[in-house]
Image 1 (cartoon, rainbow, N blue to C red):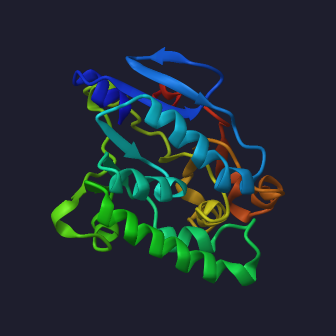
Image 2: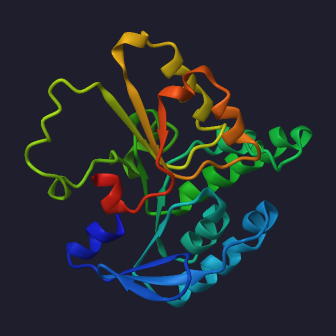
Length: 235
């Protein structure tokens, strides 16, 4: 999103966990220290992010994390132009947070939904990646913008794989909540003669998850490439 905006001529600043301030493809990175605990990420990091974001005096503030919604509510009420990128269902996300004690998850989820509803009233616009998520928000201020690839990054014709087995490529962080085990298990349910290979790229997050995946029947058909840069993912 940031690179596309920068290529279109906008001055773009990204407040994000990073080693230090730098310029990447016309996008200025403003670093935030990586939180050491989930509780710090939930309570302290949003304050740091909003402090640095507001100091940039941008005309538009694009919020891409539900943890930043309380700040979005305040900024919107103060007259700042805020866009909420609603890429996750807050209610379901909170219920899946392992670090929140189970008895408190329903209460935290209910509070999170109330904060989201209040923030949406205050922000200028909402962007969703899929129509199913958009129904939660006012139609007049909501736009569905799918996660399309940047076609210029790919060759016009795909490499010839005639005679080669099918390959499924799955890119992104994997954890239990995002169905990491289900993807690997699905490989074990395919007919052996197909020779389908699942290539995964990204971090495996969660204590003991890698060992859990390796014990799944379909793991023998999985190739784990680890974390890859954007060019490596494309290749």
